[in-house]
Amino acid sequence: MNGLRRPLFNLEGEIIGEIELPEVFKTDIRPDIIRRVYLSQLTARIQPQGRDKRAGMRTSAESRGTGLDLARVPRIKGTLYPAAGRAAMAPFVRGGRRAHPPKVEKVIWERVNKKERRLAIMSAIAATASLDLIIARHRVDGIKAAPIIVIRDLEEVSKTKDLYDFLLKLGLKDELERTKARFRKIRSGKGKMRGRKRVRAKGPLIIYKENPSVFLAARNIPGVDVVNVKHLSIIHLAPGGVPGRLAIWSEPALKALDERFGG
Image (tube, helix red, strand yellow):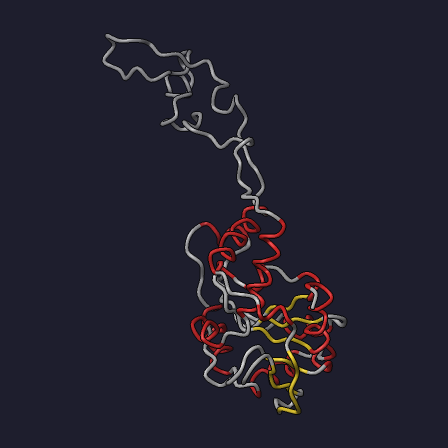
């Protein structure tokens, strides 16, 4: 597809015309700035944490010194009760203090300038129109142009089956199977205890403007995310800091880009 014109699809997956892309799609794609702003937004969500300064130190333990054929580690005072003589306080013993505990004053959030953040979002939006970048991270042999733009009726879809059938008509069968297969994988490590039991692959991103009904339809399809165009950010457009996510725009959402980023 030449220039900034892209096909316009209906809910049957048929091309019913063409539509002009907003000027923001002419922005140069800057992977370095996208990565930097992604890390900034990722670290902004991390909650600072610290430790009690007296943790592991509330004990009567003292070292017994040398000459007793014992390690000089601090030991709990007393006799004739289970804890007497047990090692305590030192970093390498059970219940001891941390050698280098985390501190709340540690700088976690990597801040970036407003103009740099704006440029990164514009660059990531432009990357959704690069078929080469999309093919590098998705299985989309069935599409010939990007991004995918759909008429306003897309925002009215509220049933998962209707949305899933529509994605199949767009030629995204392999992509949906990839995200579904990845969803079956159980995460290794302690993340399973913290609400992240399964590994989630990132599939198509549906962007709407007015009606959030499509959110209800997409929430049970693995890998498919839905976001309002007003809340669009690097986290949605470039997961992992890598540009080129497969984006499906509703026609009103696409036109709203001129309101946010200018002509």
